[in-house]
Length: 322
Ligand SMILES: [Zn+2]
Image (tube, rainbow, N blue to C red; front, side, top):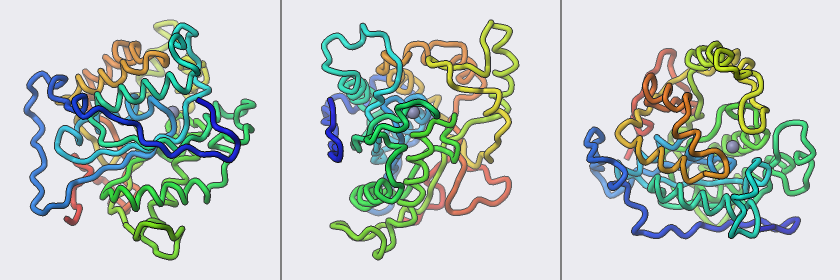
């Protein structure tokens, strides 16, 4: 799938209702109590991320858990993931890598039980310093205001109480993660302001904003262990462009940990959907094993409202006014 310059796709992937149930993946887990809202307002979570697979590899447990709990869980995916490396065998039956990755995203969305997926249609910018950064359709080449305006319109349409995006360094310094994080922060604060990006939908102010982050304690252990397995912690990932050692030196406070063990099967099923991006390795690799055994949760920094020192939430909807 290709987009001409200046043309943006704002499509919602069609999700088959019969594939949206998580129960078959849950192995009878009953640890999570479904929401019982006291009003007719449905808890609604919006994740604003950059590539097909970010929703599964980074936030999959959280999205699956809230879907299982009865919340509406929406995803905005900004790019088609064109710059992710892949084995050509995964192109069989697809016109382009974007088409393949959108199909993987639809598969993951069904596994996670997402209510909707909105594609912004920008081009993947690749890692910092690569020529793909300069492509006129690249997300990282867009004006922040124009991306923020589009996200603002979607926030007003979807009416989430809680918004989730990347941390200020985009998790591992991917330019698209950083670009969508900045645009989402701007949109979060603009959505409730009638004077900001006025559009068809009335203003809607989400109540909480979270940045997905991860434990540096765990990462430091991984950095020490990797050389023992012959791996260079400064050249991790399929493209060898993730520097774990430098990421271990940047610390963001963790204000919320979301336990995903009750929905771990759904999380793994979603990761496996992204076969072209090593989903199977993610689901089975030593890092996955370590994170399940010693973690079993996904971590967030609360950006709004400002968090008191030492805050430890177990639920992103904690304190939301219904
Ligand atoms: Zn990504």
